[in-house]
Amino acid sequence: MIYTALGDSITFGENASSFTKAYPQLAVSMARASDSGRIVGYVLAQPGWSTYDLLDAAVWQGAPVISRSAVVSVWIGGVDLANAALSALTSKQTLDPKPFVARYKQNLHAILTQIKNTSHARILCCTQYNPFPNSPLAAKAIVGLNQSTKEVAQSYNAKVVPVHKWFEGKQDQLIYGYRKGKIEDALGGFLPIHPNDRGHHVVAKGLVPYLGAGKNI
Image (tube, rainbow, N blue to C red; front, side):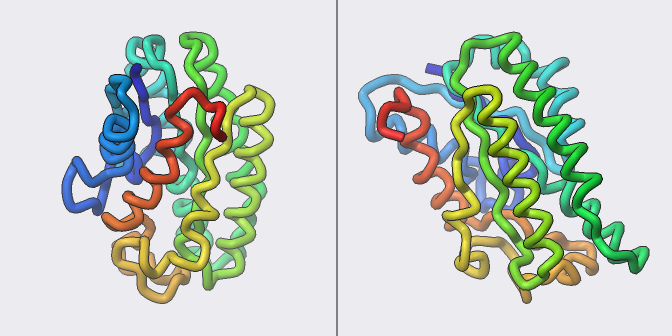
């Protein structure tokens, strides 16, 4: 069985202590240990990828492996949110989540369409946790992002993986470089938004049941 993880820097494993500590590799290792079946994992992700970048990669790079995959997970949107939030901060404007959420939704539709057109894989859509829980605007934007994820997933009969629930109230323990949980923490150039090793382990453990036949979800 082939499992392919699509995403951005989180799926790539940025700020994990090693490649094997990133959630896609961990989930595959855990699945192998708990199931006699063979599972092979692939990753299509890069730091800095927005939904548009992932769509472009899925079309031009990922089609061969996606077409052979039994399960494909999609976890994207963090960069879209971070760019919108930082742009609002630097221009001293109020963050309006509607424009970027609308673009996110449109691009997610296109990504899932691409997967459906090239594969019979079961699709998993991961929700986004909030790395800035002490910024009300970030919380509002995350709600909009995740609601859009659920709506798009439903229209494609995809499963929603509730990553945001696994991180809720534990961001300080699960995010690498976590400071005050405010958008302003990112103004210094370092983005405290990625899971640490513990965070990746939480994601992998939660993801494993979704990699099976799906009857236990």
